Image (cartoon, rainbow, N blue to C red; front, side, top):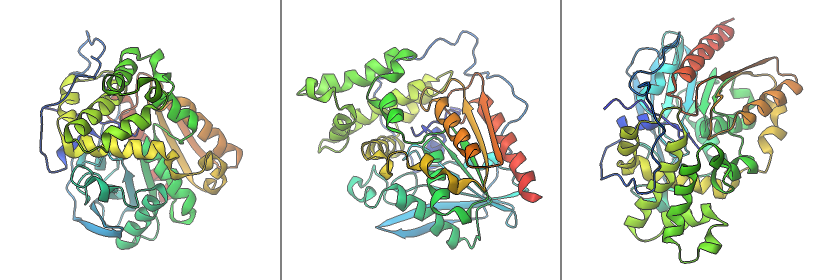
Length: 387
């Protein structure tokens, strides 16, 4: 199967992680997954052609595990030009994991490309599917930002020339850059998420997605209703209800809750949703469980940041070059977040703010229009950084 669907964060950012982690499969639970919209033009198998595509596949010249403390060892690899501009890719979810595909957003002749799995996800140890309790130890935004800087130091990189993050990864990229502003030259952000309470409520609590995706929202709610001992209480705290099931003692309940939760996001993340890819994703516990658990963990804790923190501290980024690519039809992370960030950067005097809304694109970084926009933005930043 050609696994070309990658998603957020709220990334649903990386179905391509399926190709990168030790793979144990199970029968996918599609009980609470809404069917995709029609695709009479066959766009799933024959997507629209855009001027730019990903760079060719490449292999790493260095890889390993980095002990960052709290019992976590992060899997990473390095590819591209050993003497090139240091670039790091931050995956979505949180918990989605990374894949070899994401190296291809960067020109390998220009960039020294670093990719890694964040705490609890992918090949990093422990994975939430194997040891839930251990995977959550120290799993907070400040710790993840610290991990990025520990990886930088471990690889003897003076500063990151480019930090690329999508969805949850965009939030983490901003949090890192605001914490370590002197260790970053530029940001490339896709599907911006700022962790505003309105963003979280829209996606998981208030039914904001019902307008464009009514069946997906109804199925997200229905799983809790069908398994609830007190629907009147739990309907007012859907994230809390999912958390209770995701962290309970029964493995079957944990997997069913993860399938319903992640299935909801997969159903709204692309313009054209491939049901075969959804089934493959929901049938891979090492991806499914971390994605669901980590995402709900961070949503319930407001991203472990103060309300409005990223926009309040945006002046710390005014010296950076910032490119933003956002799908016009993104139903996971709404375009207003990208607009608010761009306007905030301009108001504090940032002179390089390159915002592109992409027509016909949803949230996933596998959307052809977003691939085109991100590769063009990466190339443009490379030229700016080389001046």
